[in-house]
Length: 328
Image (cartoon, rainbow, N blue to C red; front, side, top):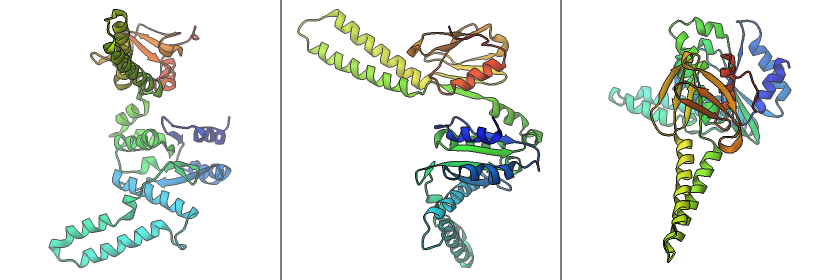
């Protein structure tokens, strides 16, 4: 599979769990490939919003730049009397900046507030779809920004996981690592995977079991005779409801190159190093009969296949030399 096909496959993914990085040395043609080869090949399917991170020094400025580029792209589909939306916003900002400069000194800050309020871009919501097409964010020059890697990758992750944008990062990864003040945090963030139980199945089952338990309890209370079996069924239904809802709320495994942090449904959060791992195996059955991964330390850590980012966790475990057998 060539690079163009890999990029297309990533863009086809719904509900992305992370961004895709296109890494290479400066001058090797990364940006050229994206803008002249890849984007033209899929322009009828996707809308690409490209943002250069060069010189951007705060997350607020980054978010404004993303909205500005998004609006510029939207205005290509729907112009306002031929005037770009972003140009209207820029004109408003310049007008109020001029007014601010002419105000008395004690009004300067008020002028800045008015200018900020009138910055239309800040009040324009953006979506991961534009006129029925999926929007792909492309961040270029990651290594040339003045924002810390921790904050920047967290912001990009928000666009991916919380706002549903497929996101492509164009960067020289080695130059990012060479920034000594950010090298450790970059490596940790890049390689840390958070696998949670916040899936649709768990939430739906929890709500269904809770509703069933309440319904059965009402019927049982209205019975003229006390039937112990009926109360046992109610208790069982409540127990299942609490299990699924607590699983959805609390269950989490955070895995990195150095450690495994396990958040159980109830109980104490535990941290293990990879040297604490005695065995890792697949297990059939389990909740939902979808299969799971069992990690044996001093406790048993179960990772169900319907947990978010299961595939990434599985990949990291395999990179550590485990899971060399198939599911039984």
